[in-house]
Amino acid sequence: GENVEQHPSTLSVQEGDSAVIKCTYSDSASNYFPWYKQELGKRPQLIIDIRSNVGEKKDQRIAVTLNKTAKHFSLHITETQPEDSAVYFCAADTVGANNLFFGTGTRLTVIP
Amino acid sequence: GAGVSQTPSNKVTEKGKYVELRCDPISGHTALYWYRQSLGQGPEFLIYFQGTGAADDSGLPNDRFFAVRPEGSVSTLKIQRTERGDSAVYLCASSSGSEQFFGPGTRLTVL
Image (tube, rainbow over all chains, first blue to last red; front, side, top):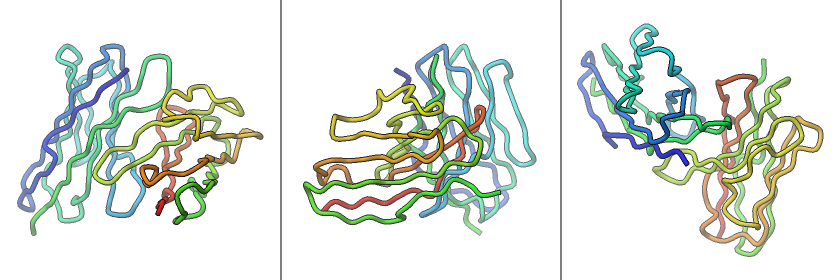
């Protein structure tokens, strides 16, 4: 089955700096890669996703890049704000199914 | 509109007891998923329903876990003979396409 690895596990940045979180996946047939943000005690919420037919996608301060050959994808948050502080999870789908395999999460802290 | 809801929000039970966790998906979503999230980990897939049928139950850890969705809407996750290791947040998600919308979860504590 799919195996998703995520790093770093924790990340602290100064407000206004950029944050980058990286994930790798094992199943070359995976084609959908969402990123979820989870605040303490809350549900995971989708912030951006990318399909394997594109290499990059942007939404305001958030961007995701995908390298299919290397089987890795990254989340980039620019001009970070304290409200960006949360745990971020990457995920990949599985061939022939709709369930997601999640990374272990990155706890992002934005220092005001 | 209303999002995915789950009840109860918290459940404390004793080892060996039976529990039921309920999920109300977004209206019209045919796909429903159950995940389990342990502290400091990402959600772990348990089971996926498409309509009334379990399309993939490969994530259920053992035969103490069972889930139903009899009318293709509400789903119930059932855990028999609970063990302390079952303690986690149980998340439900629904979708009508690729994006999965998560519920707030049920925090299960087995004493």
